[in-house]
Amino acid sequence: MSGRTQDSRSDTRHDQQGNGRYGSSRWTHCRKRGVDGMLRTDRECEERENTKYSDNRNSSFTTPESTGPVSRCSERRTDWGSQVEDDEMRRGVQRDMQRYRRRILGAEGAHRERKASSGSSGSCDSREGDNMETDETVLLRRQKQINYGKNTLAYDRYIKEVPKHMRQPGVHPKTPNKFRKYSRRSWDQQIKLWKVKLHAWDPPAEEGQDGATDSIDELGLDDIMDIELDFPVLSDPSCAPASVNVHRISVEEEDCSGTPVKVQKTESAAELEMS
Amino acid sequence: MGCEYPTEDYKIQSFDQDTQMLLKTALKDPGSVNLEKVSNIIIDQSLKDQMFSKEAGRICYTIVQAEAKQNNGSVFRRNLLNRLQQEFKNREEMRKCSLQEWVCFVTFICNVFDYLKVNNMPMLALVHPVFDCLMRLAQPDALLNEAEVRIDPPYKEKALFSNYRTDPLTFLLQVDCLVLQLHRIGEQLENANRPRMDELFFQLRDGFLLQEGLGSMSRLLLLELLEFRAGGWSLSSTADKYYYSEIAE
Image (cartoon, rainbow over all chains, first blue to last red; front, side, top):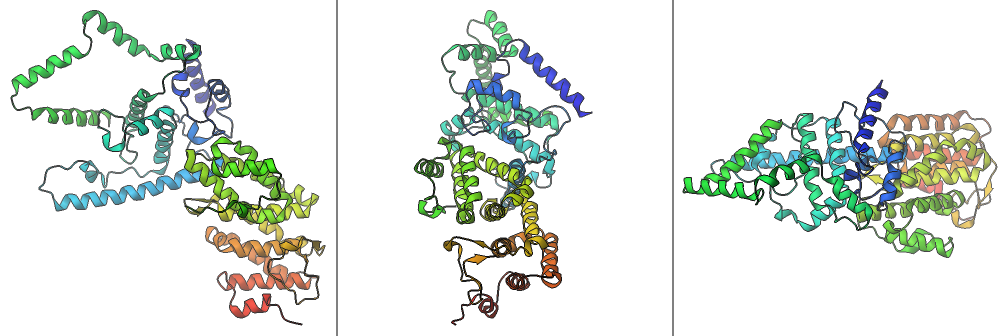
């Protein structure tokens, strides 16, 4: 019964790969480590693809399914190595949950004390207290997706190059908060966007034929469309309209205090839209 | 956790030079060696060498820690556990071939259970297998196995029962293993699964009370275990004296 969904999924996988044998490499070539823990080479990647569904795959190295109703988390794996890994992840999530609860309670206490003072940064947690995701299956599924994103060279480079205090919301990728209530669709979208952002820190492609092919193939259809549409219309692409807008706003509203509010508004609106 | 042991403590002197080098590298820079090979070396040696199997959990622990710290990996642990599982599946066969190897295996798996923890808790995946092994050691054929095997002198930790007429260097291999393991991990196992510990002790009690032809050594070892658990996994000083003191002749 689940065989059918599995089949159709692997069909689409093949279709995607159809237009070039490096089609799937966008998401796999930067994987840090294989099952053996050694850095992966391109050749290994192809072999891994074949063994992906074998029993000894490592949970954190496998793409969690982002679409479709099949949940791999609830599947009970029988080899001891995997069992202990699952156990470790479950306990990790439980521990995170306790910490998160404590943080929320702390934030709520602080919030009540200085209610009058302006909205503090990071106060968004306080209202989350009773609106928290506690379903273990959901949390484990989300954790797996996060682990998958973190098991990349790009993520390593990112956390090395941009220390935590330098990260700016909206500019730098921020790991989605797995404890907030989101719809499945919203969560998967957040993960997707996060991973796309992380790709900005992909290591420079190695010289050689593989690298060249990769970088061309990695430009998705959307990217190409953007370029083709923007190019003929404006000689100075993208920047020009933005700067015009900014200029107009600053002229119309003399006190520029409105601008940051607007930014925040769009953000929260986007969030509402997603959930 | 900064538990760093000097390399002598890992009892790797019995390996050849190359293997010693490999193990030392695995302890310091696990990412640079083939960890599957390392796990196999450790298990192979454990199955041959009882001395080693008693403390092999410690070297495993250190490699696991080092690997997690270095690249957040768990390749060594995965290979170790899966190989252990393979041996576990094959245990009856192994037991028939060599009692010594079987006892080494039980010693090793218990030692791994003792040393390797997940978030400071025992590995749940090993709880039932460890109980299965100990149950096997508590079955009548194991209790009655009087084929006492000569073991190397360093095996003798405490001068157990040296006041008995028995040769102090010969032990009841299986029952003695059972005693040692329960002393080490009995309490943890009971916390992990009380009903199974009850089951094990029903069997030990029945063995003690009902088994005909039980040797006097086995009787005494079993009695000690019963008292040990009843005393909350410790022996009172008088009991300790009773079971372990060397009485001058």
